[in-house]
Image (cartoon, rainbow, N blue to C red; front, side, top):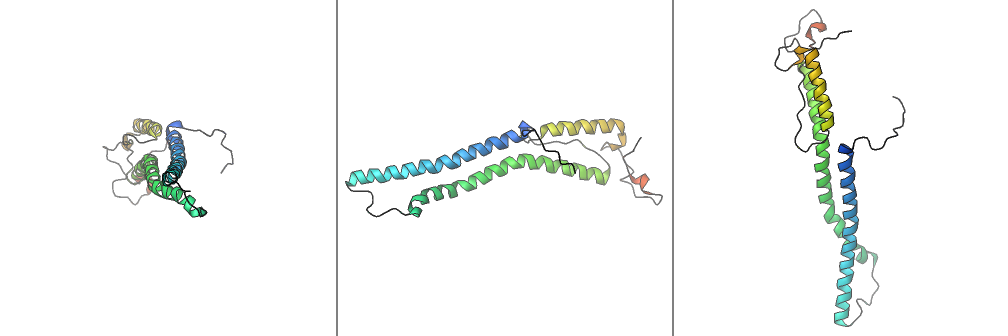
Length: 171
C-alpha cells in the first residue's frame, strides 16, 4: 500500500458537508444549552435571594452543586445527538450497503444491475458513476443484463471454470 499523504482535506462536499455541518451544530448546541441553563439557574437563585432579602446560600457551593445543571443538560441532550448522527450516517451506510449487495449479487449470478438509492441518501455522485459503469458493461457484455440467462446461473460443467463465468475477459 502506498503512503501518499492526502493533500486535499475536503474531498466531496455532498458527503462531508452534511457531516461537518451537523457536527458543528451539535457542538454549538451541546455547549450553549448548558451555559444557558447555568444562567437560568443562577438567575433564579439570585431572584429568590432578592425576594427573600437574604443571601442565596450561607454555605459554600460544592463542585457538584455547580456542575449538576450542566451534567443533567448533557445527559438529556446526548440521546438526541446520537439519534441524529445515526440518521445522518444511515444516509451514507445505506448506499454503501446497497452497492455491496449489488456486487455480491453480481458475484453469485453474473448479472449486474444499476443502483437505486432512496431519496435523501448521500453518495448520489457515486451512484451515477456506478450506473454509467453498469450501462457501459451492458453494452460491452450483453450477457450481464439481468433479463438474460447466464452460464453462471446454469449448473457447472466438469470441463472447467471458464464456462461458468458470465464475464468475458478480452485483451
